Length: 109
Image 1 (cartoon, one colour):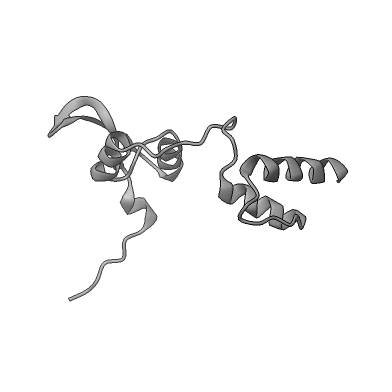
Image 2: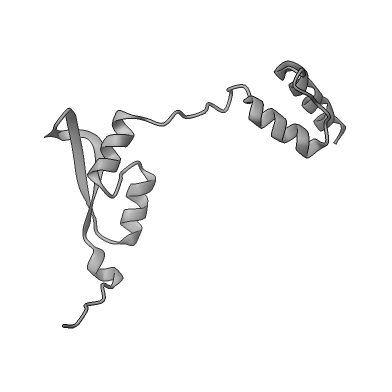
């Protein structure tokens, strides 16, 4: 019995999926498209397509929270930045005080 080696050319065309579209599925709809080569696949993946239907459904049904660029920094982000800048802080230091210390230290740089 010989084992066949799959080359990159054997992978195409392949299908990619989105969790919403003209085709029916349990609980919603989906769409699919062909990717004819690696460049086409990379472009489609960058445009929000997925290599499997379950991934596409999950991404559509349970979208990941996207942090806005204008959203305030989280406590963990503030603490990380303060440590990078060598700013002393404790448990009693609130977020506003820590943010002000970071802003002041960055202004000195």
